[in-house]
Amino acid sequence: CFDDSAAFSYYTLFKNRDLFHGGLFTNAPLRKTVAENNDENRLQLYLSGQKSTGSRSSLKKTVQFFKASKYPIRFDTYESKKDEYPSSEMLKKYEIWIDTLDRL
Image (cartoon, rainbow, N blue to C red; front, side):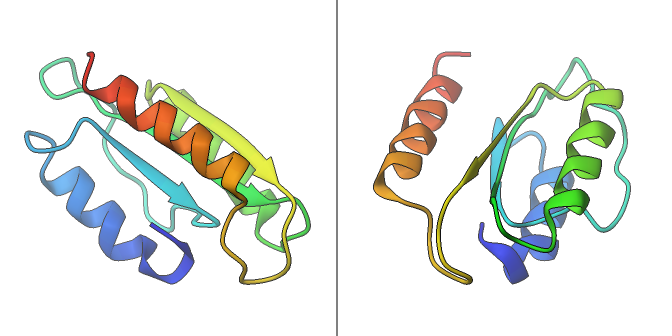
């Protein structure tokens, strides 16, 4: 999910752990806390953000929170203009990560 749709996407992901293996969020810091990862329905996360965004510190705090809550998480930054979608190189990284979810 990208930016403003994050609240609903985070809610949907954590409410329906039995349906999802992971979530990918771009420029989307977590605004509410969630329960620790559980062994029954483990989730993996991928967060990314623009290098020059104002929410970068919020994204880092989100990554720290998820790590402390036992979520496997990947975090990358990328160069782009404000409100521009990630580059094709970044999208390729997303594609590879998403493909790994099917192998868990």
